[in-house]
Amino acid sequence: MKHFFMLILLHIAVCNIGFCQTQKAANTKSNIINGHPGWIMQGNIYEVNVRQYTEEGTLIAFAKHLDRLKEMGVQTIWFMPLNPISKADRKGSLGSYYAVSDYSLLNPEFGSMDDFKQIVQSIHQKGMKVLIDWVPNHTGADHRWLTEQPDFFVKDSTGNAAMAVDWADTRQLNYKNTVMQDSMIAAMKSWISNTDIDGFRVDVAWNIPASFWRKCIPQLKKMKNIFMLAEGDSAYLPVSGFDAVYPWHMFKMMEKIAKGQRPAFGLDSIKLENDRMYPANTIQLYFTSNHDENSWNKADFGTFPGPVHAPFAVFTQTMANSVPLIYSGQEEPVLRALQFFDKDPMTFERLERASFYKTLLELRKRNNALSADASFRKLRVGDEKAVYAYVREKGRKKVLVILNLSKDQQQVHIKDKTLAGYAYNVFGGKKELLSNKGFNLKPWGYAVYEYNSY
Image 1 (cartoon, rainbow, N blue to C red):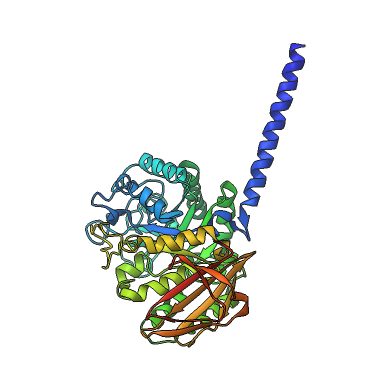
Image 2 (cartoon, rainbow, N blue to C red):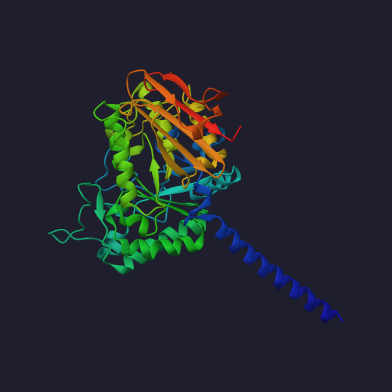
């Protein structure tokens, strides 16, 4: 009888395990939307420049800001490269994040691997996700593979490892070498299994063969429902497994409109171009700044100065097929180009834009009309050379966005019958009747309305 009951208990245990595994697989499947992790669809990304974020420049020091960022509405933290930096041919006193000397280790400048594991755990406990920056196109000039595996590198005319593009502190990896490919994949897998990260932002993804990504990404996604962000706008990247790409053409058009060189409707031509180029469900990372644009091109204090920043930030937070990015310090705002190769810490004392970003981030989180897969419809509500307006919609939810992308006051008139009735003015904090409504938008002004959400 004793053995009989033991068999019964074993049978129940096995069934429970099977049920849990089935349920886990079902949950994983249900958390994939249009091929992407469901958690990113109404999410956002905040890029962390660890070196410059605090005086200490460590992960532990940065961790003190997590509650503040959570309160602001940040959902996904992207850490710029965390690997050790090569000393050979180093630029500046500390070198470039993107000249990696070992893919398996953490830069001691930032702390220990245990520090990182603890911060990932803390981020997850706060309901947020973690991406790390990965640099697979090239290594630093003294990466251990240069001596251990010299065939992993492209050779120059002298037979030495070739410099990547014109970056003197790097060496170009050889993607014709399948052993190197497998070593790269193994390194990426180890960060998922050992630290529980939620995905990668991949540097110079555009210069790596599609065949590698078709081999690599399915293996990574089999481990976990991760998010893959490609730095690049090549059409082959989404069909090779990436969830999201960079909208460089759109960003450049935004810059031209901000300078008065192109009309507001210039955005339409880029959207049409992107719709034709990418598969229907491709996500794009919209931004007004990132580490490259800040350090080298004065974004956003030079490209979208003063009041010019706001309507373009609203655009990046509410546009179709997109996930928005905020770069370190934009919420302050830090109005200078951060040094790339030397210490140049930020301070967070005023946080003048924090409430502005919080309003947008919370709107995206609560209203699925701003989901990456929600529909987009352009509206004419004023002079289309200056005013850009559109409706995002999904299910019963609807968001109306009106932007004045000019230095002059603009008249706006909402005549669309589908928008008649009351809507919630997100930045005004009140309900308004929008039936045949007319009003003025100040230079570089904006208005965002929610329907069926108040």
